[in-house]
Image (cartoon, rainbow over all chains, first blue to last red; front, side, top):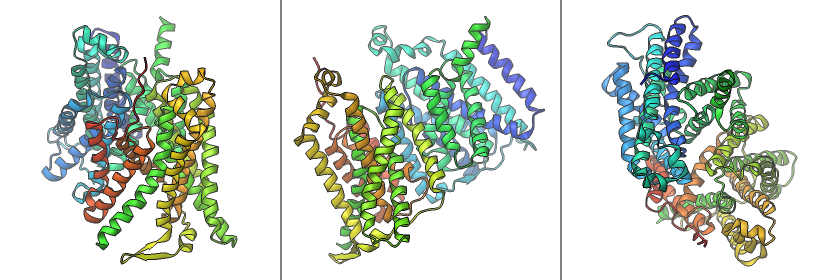
Length: 311
Length: 298
């Protein structure tokens, strides 16, 4: 399972980042936490994108994960980081499994739009419900780890990085199984895949559920690292667009790509915001267009090219 | 009775501006097969341009009636300038690419255009109440309505009739239908398809701008304007059937009136209701309630 280059890079790279994190200043650790949290959602979208499906509504699962954390914190007083994460991922995953029964019959624009509709339903409910925090959202108490409340953010960073590593390895493994390989084939020719004896609907359903679990986990981790949730930065359709943007930016080539892409996005956004607070969206949007036009394989295609040259 | 009338008129007004914006969106989709996310920016640009110049001209002491001219001029200017630049500068090079990728490109454009608004007009809201104040208000069936809001219904009707006339009674309509039906066959019949695309995109953009420019006097024109409108018009277009003008009309009526009903009777479900309808239609009739018939090709 761990013999291929990608797994090794994930494993050693992850450990190296954890060790380096102990020496890095706080703001870098923060950026890495946000980047890695979001990257989980991108990992799920990557699986869908390889299959030719683009969801313009995965903020639904992202927000579901984040709000689960907020609600178990406020209603039940759960502070344990693992229970929160598991709760967020499972609720999103269950929703994804149920909605997947409908979603697996849709392709192209319709797939994108139905996801948007569902995410906006949740947005509409939360924005208008006072007990769910309305437009203000909630603040979330600091997570504890096995009952111990950490004094710095470093332990949470270690956990996020480890979860990221495990997810990347798991997705990498999944993509090598027979069902997992049914990505590009489905995109290219569904009828042939059916003739080969596989159910396209089942394959897509599984991929959709995986992406929902990952997006939910991403939302949960994001909520904990930010310490707050609110609908406009978690569930609105622009968030879904942002997630798709990072997927394109990363490129579908490899499970490591989402992590690099998310970090590049965090840095891009932070610097764009500092450079021109009123124009950061402009910079992000222009980057997006540039990537679509000149780098259809995303950042990963550059790395892959370098790799080929060296070998 | 009075509540009923209020809901009906509110609903109709809301439907009207939704229709104007969605008509542009659906025309662009019908002809070019592009789901144009930056249509929301055309709306916002229309609103800002109109509000800005109405304010400026009013300060210069021009009569308030000039406001109406400015609204139309703003819509046309926004549509022609932005539509032309975007179609010729960017979308033209993307027609060979995947449909979904074009959606994403327009999303990128949306982000860019949103921020150019902030840079050009600043973050403070604009108020352009002059045309609205000019038209006074009337009493109908026991309730008082401002005439400007009612005129919105008239404008939407004019847009609907205009689109119907253009599509069914003119040579242009025939050309558009030919391109919608079969692009390649259209080319071989001597239709200048790239030119048709450019004009269509500009026409759609003008409608988007008009929606914004006409609504500007009734609202405070503030940042984030386009974000809400674009998903609402997505809902309209999906409910009605993508690419159908009649569908856009029915879709905006359904969504406009449902939303007005929700606002008055159960404000908590205002947004929920719109997107729930969208989701239900997509689940049971993905092609929309009034989708244009798909041509059968042999």
